[in-house]
Picture 1 (spheres, helix red, strand yellow):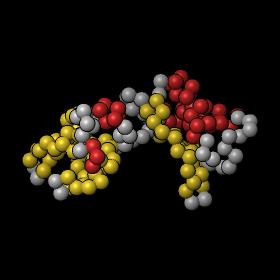
Picture 2 (tube, helix red, strand yellow):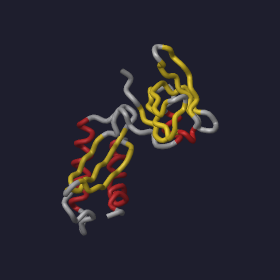
Picture 3 (spheres, one colour):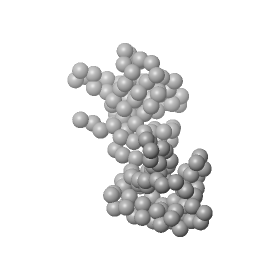
Length: 158
């Protein structure tokens, strides 16, 4: 089962290239009694429901036509965008998010907090994050050491 994402990626890549989409992630997981093949796609202007339907139809047809079947058990195919609050998984994605509103979860408290939301202002040479956050109606700037960072994701500002 562990090679299912690799097989799907090989089948999916030409389909995504045809539509000028990017692959964000592939998951093949069992939840309760059901298997799920989840494909997350993206493009600079954002993914629409129609985009998801097109990729789902084409990917489903390609997988169904394969002999032998690369996924012999029944599964649900889900195609979606990574979402407005997508994780930032690596240095490149974090640097591309400069100027965006983000959520940062920490392994240990920095200035008494383990979670910060604010605008990413910069990323230092050491990959520390410089954010501007609202502290009781006062905007403050904070440098978060990279070793303290557990997760970073885009966030929606309310």
